[in-house]
Length: 297
Length: 301
Image 1 (cartoon, rainbow over the protein chains, first blue to last red):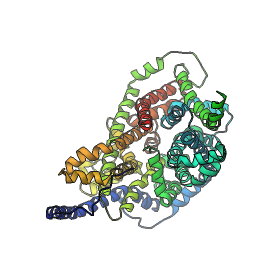
Image 2: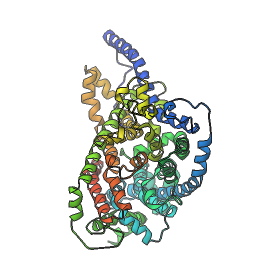
Image 3: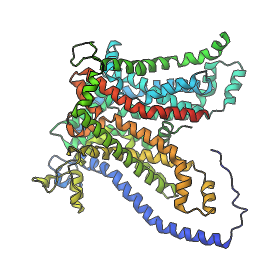
Image 4: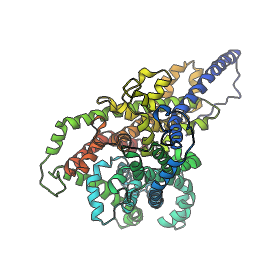
């Protein structure tokens, strides 16, 4: 972003200016209390569901009575956690096996695409890019019926293998978009110099682009990891409880008529731990991913 | 011609896997889905008898489907309105220098990292419809109990069990989950406005309101458009949150096209399911295609 610079130091400040500044400062100070009160109020609002999840997960069956819904447990019990863990553990492993490779593959392909589309542009590249991008926005419901047929025709087994394929394929548009925007900040001169030295498209990628791609990969991998981990739509169509990822297992644990509240809330927490860790450790890049998925430039 | 192929060939070749995958899994399947929607394949038995647009006209005439479209409209309006209001408000407060800004931002944004299925577990309980004034109401849970205990008992309601407006209750957790995202977008928008622009306006004697009206809002409009597109198209596809909160997929009160499509699919009514998918696609495309063309043009400039 180019900004016109105004030289503030040399500007003589009149007494009038100072007075209006002081007035504004006073107003700001008055607002400050209100501001923090508002911010804190919203923090409580946002954290309320998390509070309920945590306290209820530690309650015993009798203690999970609605009349005490908002109070801390009388006795902290871990029965819900044990039940949730034994129910979800197999699906957690399956989900990890599903999510990590599919994120890596789509990130790698996205990086190649982004490189070609930003640095090795050919006639019609813009149209191709826009057509790839559209794949990010389609409601998957609009392809689901023939998709189930296609995946079974291809002989891909239900459950994790077919979900892996789908997360790679439908992750391609956003990976391409993020890398294309990221590589736009790599100076074209670097590419030109490599070309002059006789490096081809792949050599240039390996020696110039790949070494500077780390931040881009972090953003894309976080994004792909989170969205594949949290996916339920594909999981519902392409797996059952026995071979499903964690979202399916959780929906079974929490979905019955006679729900064990403590266990289902502990399960929801367990299912959220991996993405929460990613968010807490790499929150800055998480936001970066959100941005590059929406705001261009 | 040969020289051209040599220059552009390798690039096109590298893109080929993606072009083929997207071509098959997006474009070909869209066409194939449309084809299925024109057949009378209403049972698991394969059938390819074409019936034209009969499935579409039947669906559009079906009060059930009309209700689901109405629900979708309510959901989208409330979801969009809520996320825009909270997102803008939070960004606006945080945009002025504040201590602990990073903390507040992180808290507001964290629900975004959680799946709708996991958050649905707790929201299902928070949005329980039992009220303290009802028989057996001492067993009230969730928000109704909370409202009652802070003296706002009058605000207790049926939440999603209301047949007309229940769908708006589904928007509450959706707003909870995505307002932070919209906040992040607006914060990026605010940061993109050069300070000099505001200072200049202030020196010219602009009032704060006029500053917003003429300088800040216009600068934020591209961000606002992005937010509308993203939230709007998420709302059209919303499926998992409803499934997580309302156990029975066929619950009329909160039926939207995406859940109705699931009901048709498990009932092996593939033609109707495909037709609903196509209708959703048209709704999304009406919004997204102009947006994509607009941004790709803006980029060229």
